[in-house]
Image (cartoon, rainbow, N blue to C red; front, side):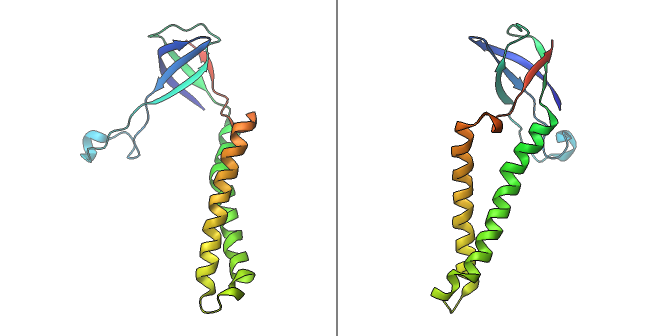
Length: 138
């Protein structure tokens, strides 16, 4: 995936790049009249091309990295939540026989919290979860 950006600053060997975001309504804000604003995304990448402040650049992120990040951030918590609901209804519902669905849902949310905490801890330690965005050209 490629995105155009503007170098807004430099920090050592890194370039700070501002990328314009598309709005969720498809960038048709004049016809939408919803009044939403889409703030730009600011990323910091290695400045391998020696870009200077004010340069327009193209950023590239490998598609497999985007798919992998999406799977980790969205699919894994969903699967863990469903697993928590099922386990809560099958295992822990015996403690509260009046409402096993409530126990299942609460267990699912507890599992969901643990999933996001685990992802956050894993992300800090491992390079695999970091998006590898590179400057492609000026």
